Length: 358
Image (cartoon, rainbow, N blue to C red):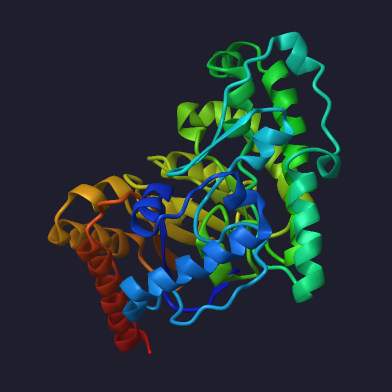
């Protein structure tokens, strides 16, 4: 069972547009691939978080440069698509975008996994990590290693979902190759930094041991039956290759997949907004559950509505001893009052739980 560094940990992650408009940070190629630029931006981001939300434990008053392998403040899942051959578009105020590279079935069938360290961007990243390691003597953080269904879609296109129903052999073989690339990449990073998935969800740095988190952003586009038949066996094999396996599920209705996640098995699961935490807990009794708030509601709702959102999540999940709360990819314009409301409400539950449970 995972242990957190705090009872009921809370994490916020802001969208690149928030950072760009708040601090002038550009999410260009250098942000992700230039070690010194990455370190400079990291110092700035930690300072800004402290200035705005330091009273709730976020950021640092006087941050010092640290040798981060990838940004620990935003998600940017471009490495796996790039290793598969996708062109990546960088821009000032957005996460990197893999441009679709739709391939024929013959091309997909003949795809051969690349040597990750001989191909971009891992060759460029690892060279930079070598320089950081030499300067500092250690490395922190990791990179977003994406997910098999997410990555497959960039190359297969919408036919992926039809073929998973009618002719699953081709997409399943392709996703098995993607899974090997993900595990190879995550294992290499873990051997260098000790973590794999802080860049998927910052909650990973709050947990011990820090879990590997596989990104299942697109799973809600297939039925639970299709997941069980075609993707579950792949994830079960992935979990045999890397320890402390977890799932990032940012979509709705996590509960209809949760019983299958338990068969992987997972030690960590994100509970997407508009899911049923109580049912998820019944299927995942021993997993750390990261309850996700809606960044859209955080942007558009009043503080009283946000308070109700947090309370509903925490009241429905039951025992809070293996639970966290997060809100990921909040846009510029999200009221700071709402962020403070979430922080204050979570703190109130910490106090109440300690009062009643010791």
